[in-house]
Length: 167
Image (cartoon, rainbow, N blue to C red; front, side):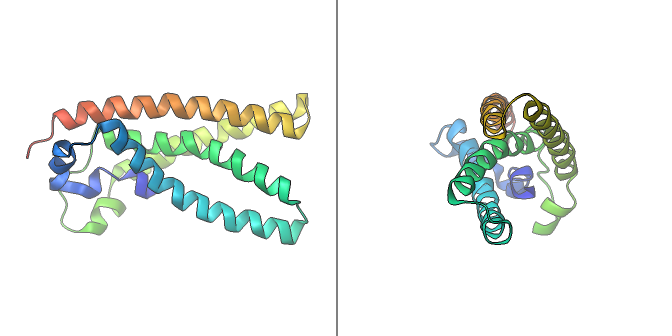
């Protein structure tokens, strides 16, 4: 989600407000990720509902897909925040420039593509060793753990970046 990938840059010169708000940086990072989650969840829900009707998946399979997809989205969203936490684009001429002309978006996309390929390869490998539901559970756990690590890293980077923001 480019919304997550540019969440600091979109604040631009007003980023100092996030520094002065009496909310811990960890909570602010979680809120930035949650906004991306809402977009991912809405899109995933529509896609999974379509698979129920078009491919005949059952409701339990739909629920399993939503949970597994949510776990898989966690490391991708956390990773998308990292380039912008390292070097947000604080000066821009229009709101569109903060998102569409921001190298951080491209870096986040490349990082997320690499993670998605790795998750896909892990899934294929595990499916060759065990039943699909068990492989899905293992991948979901790995994704959740990786997401937690990347989230912690994004929080540390955000705390460091916030210390350099001038009001």
